[in-house]
Image (cartoon, rainbow, N blue to C red; front, side):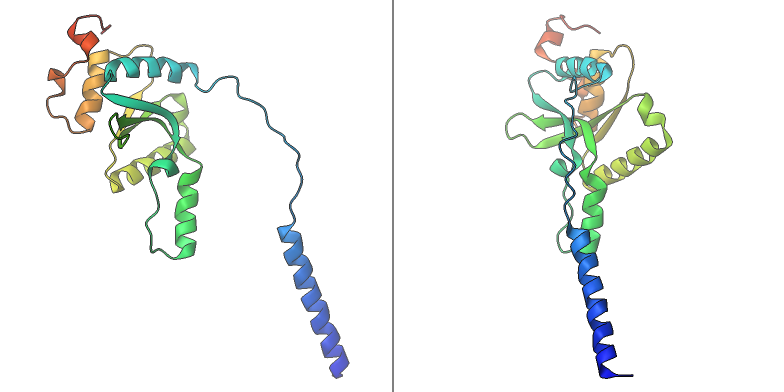
Length: 183
């Protein structure tokens, strides 16, 4: 084969590869196709937040809709590909509520409100994965079934027991001690 033909074929292959690379890096202008959500919480989440605030009292701070990646990080020292895969698995997920120590805002536990969406097949897989991750990093994950009403004392005791306060029944918020809490 003529050397010029070989050089021409190499140039064509290189030009094609460069074209493919440039095309893959091209930013597509999609404009700004976004809308503002009318509210941050669903009705069930909003109602539960009020009950949760009452059950926990002033001892902890509650944060809602916190990204898993803001609470849990990927181990260092992993191969870049493994680290990227592990990061991608938690990036788009969030906890419904996070309970933090009021003094230093350290994360005490995660709380998931299990509504009808948690019964879907893909959501069940998501929930199992999240439970496994929380178990791996020793983060208590409290799952609360969504319902019409929540007994304050039961909710408080469930959460306190999950975070390792052994005699949770003996601990009450100031409003519970004065008898103002709804059961």
